[in-house]
Image (cartoon, rainbow over all chains, first blue to last red; front, side, top):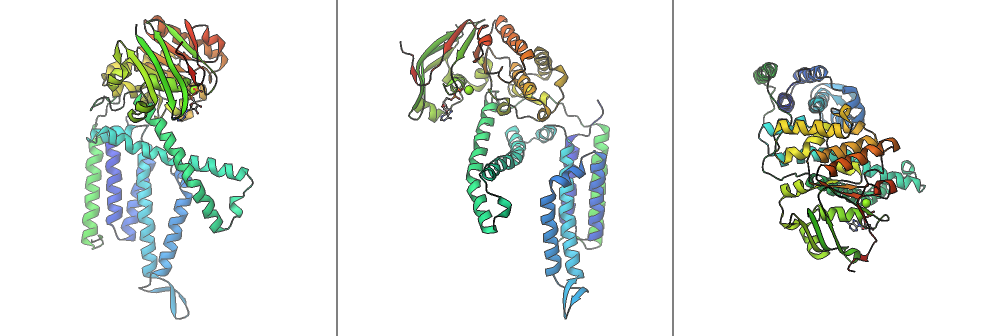
Amino acid sequence: MKKRIDPRVKLLFIILLTTLAVLAKDVIYMSIILVVGIVINLCLKTDILYAIKRLRHFLSILIFIAIVQSLSIKGGRVLIPIGNTALLSTKGLQFSLEFLLRMSIIVVSGLIATSTDGREMIDGLLKLHMPYELAFMTSISLRFIPVFSEEFKTRLNAISMRGIDIKKLSLPKKIRVYAYLISPTISGCIMRSEVLAKSMQVRGFRAHPKRTMLRELKMGILDYTLVLISLLIAAAFLAGMYKHGILVTF
Amino acid sequence: MKLKVNRLGLKYGKDVIFNNLSFELNEGEILAFKGLNGSGKSSLCSCLTGLFEEDFAKDNIRGEILYDNINLNNMSIAEKCNAFGLIFQNPDDQLFSPLVIEELAFAPENLNVPREEIQRRIDLALKTCKIEHLKNAKINTLSGGEKQLVAIASILTMQPQILIADEITSRIDKEKIDDIRQILIDFARSGKSVIMISHNENDLKIASRVIVLERGKNYAN
Ligand SMILES: Nc1ncnc2c1ncn2[C@@H]1O[C@H](COP(=O)(O)OP(=O)(O)O)[C@@H](O)[C@H]1O
Ligand SMILES: [Mg+2]
């Protein structure tokens, strides 16, 4: 089997990238951080295009917010004037670009987690001394996001089959239909989670305070090298941003 | 006597499922339950594995379940797992791991079985179910029949004394059903016991006894 990068190293990448994204306040620095994040994903062979497709609604909301921000924040040089006032100014543009970059870095660093196989991430968290109940709960609650949308879609389909075309409804009616579907969807999810709990229970989940881990995680030379390099690079970035006064101050 | 069930009763609120159900199960035996949909077969499986919450059980479950003369209610999680292994009616309800190997490791990991032993049990269970080629597969890429086999294997790795199989042949291709029956027969031959739920007449042929469940029936006499 080929050498895989330890999930703990990937966790470190994620933490460093998101920290830098939150702390940075400069379009150029953030673009570089984004590129680094993308390069890491390319090296780990995650499916970026697929993720963009899956997240397209979320991304279009982000872009919409960014556009609103760019138009509503005034200051700096006027880029596009309408009459006496500015439609778009440098400050608005800068602000929305930073927002977009920051969110992109967070999405891209989250993608790193998808390069792990199965429950590798849980094993990484366990090795970092997270209690196993908590680690499992985290990963299972993530698993329930698609379950929720599945349950919701099933019920939406049931409604369409009764001849109601959701797309043609007016917004208030649409909202009424969605609200009407929320409670059966939630009860569907609760039922699924109860079944899941039973499946775990009959196989001894929480039988003992400790459990064995089939997968043995060992940090190799490559892993330690990556930790060292990424810490150094992150420190360099922070130092650079501090020197140029472009760190977010709280 | 491995298992002794005395005057077991179950109701959901006012809805009586069965009452005063008594039976025994010996080592090496295959005991079958059949009955119409909704007759309470899966509910019986839940009773036997102690899957009902204490509050619910207090009001709705009567009678006693003794394993090796110990009441099910007084057994720890680990002891219950050593006694009963339940294969769910629907593998989609049972399987929740991303990878086949993780699903198979889940029970023995919980029970603190040493790593080498888990590895050995996984290989054995894969061989028993003839799915060695799926060891490193992702579960969400499997067919319904394959999932059923993985569900069986994931209980075999726990090595329970009594295997409870809830309609496990209903999703399997005709050619493979005989393999599944052989798994149950071999399991019983190794000195353990099987409780099998099934409608299939050919399944029932491998059982030493068949009990017919009827919804709401009182078995007192
Ligand atoms: N948790 C529950 N709450 C209330 N009723 C239930 C519950 N589980 C099952 N039932 C009802 O009990 C009856 C028996 O169900 P089940 O044990 O699944 O039957 P079978 O497995 O024989 O088809 C069904 O009518 C079902 O609707
Ligand atoms: Mg059933």
